Picture 1: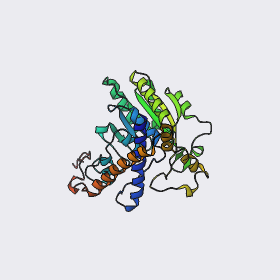
Picture 2: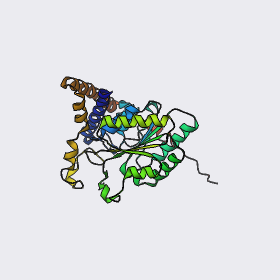
Picture 3: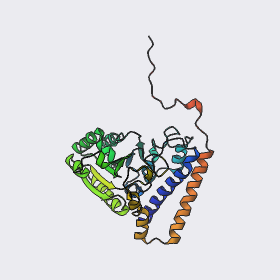
Picture 4: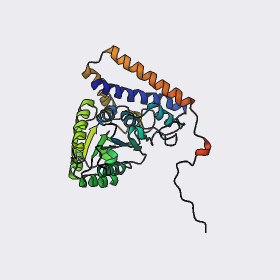
Length: 319
């Protein structure tokens, strides 16, 4: 399992580093929110979920999509707005959706996908399915009304929902100290709403996998919803391919401290993975990524005649 987990994290890191490298070329014309530095939580939870489980995400969704089994080719095509993208080239980076992978939706509005996950869990319960819904959210989403209403309803109905909060300490450029009272404890808030809550080191992939696996097993047995707060850190800017430490919204040395806790380096050391094995994994992933970009750049854009396909509308009555 652990080598598989390391490979999943390495793949997410390398995909996003390649997106960052190529983004200035101007072929990907959608905003991108990278999660480099946060790979452990996405990879570990994705590995713990079953194919039949359904996942929901936010604007920072590449890692969640890939970890849930999303198709790399379809994601890179989507970022290029091309035919064959997982949302047919119409959604871009922030609107990934792929039924084949059980990845229902990612949305650009903070907290917007939380009610979707809870509503889907209600449907799963009513249908008697042995599946759960997993909602990835950030710490900023816990400041939205949608979180409180959804968590309350999930607890009231004891729905099979796993809330995975990736707490990276910032909402765009605002630290927690500018947005929440100093004494606020997100796990205590979640517990007060009726969720079983636990805080984890989100850069400890094995710990996150163990906690997610236990939570998912309990959810399948009918236990109430679970909230995992995974402490982690994004290395690059909120939106875009660059580093932004020069802006000064993070304390001096904070980024460097978290980079010294690189989850990939930690897991590789714990596994005792040899240089030869690490290079083999890296070469295979690099080849896969190169092929995905080659296919995406060669693929056509959607036909102009299909521009209104998939749009729901009602004709106005002119009488």
